[in-house]
Image: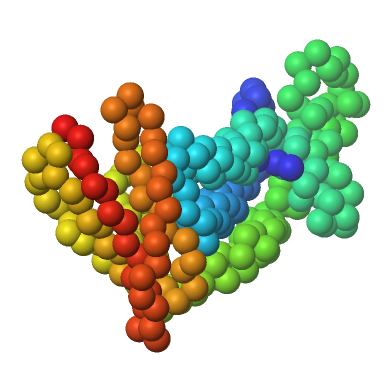
Length: 273
């Protein structure tokens, strides 16, 4: 791939040749940048959607696990940016390179442009009168050839078609997801970007916890009730910290089930200070 340029010393070349080839190199870089941005955008969106999908289908209680999943998505995006943008743009392109690219697409030029560049720019090349005459004639023909070249026709954005198609598919998908499930999409998107946030997952809107925030004296009893609209719920757990700081998990008992939802209860006879 041709993706960057470092122009050598071509002071002896006709300005028409140097100017057009420099424009061609700039166009190559623009196409490469555009293509790389599209590819990176696609990877970033797909990675984020995967994280959101995992959050929608799995209850992840560990913040470290959530951070690990988000980090994988961020790493995938960073690698894509490095491979599709940074690395290609660091590749050197000389005038000879771009001239050869033109000649591949235009075999009728018979490599006159690249040959002229190589001969004229070679300071160690020993010239006699006959060779000077031949090279001058070659440069003259190269100037004629270069005037027939149109950068926009030689280098098009056709190479970016796969990335454009992918982006064209992804954008409607994003719009559809955020239009059909706006609350769930915004919530999981925020949780994907900020794994340490205290935002509840999408299941939080389907449950009601009683008594909610409350204050009790040490030794009082506590009755906890959970009402869920999820008819598929079969197990509800109550998690709390013991006196030694360890986590205690207690299974709540289902006390009511109807077409509107289910209710689970747990009685804590004594609440420690």
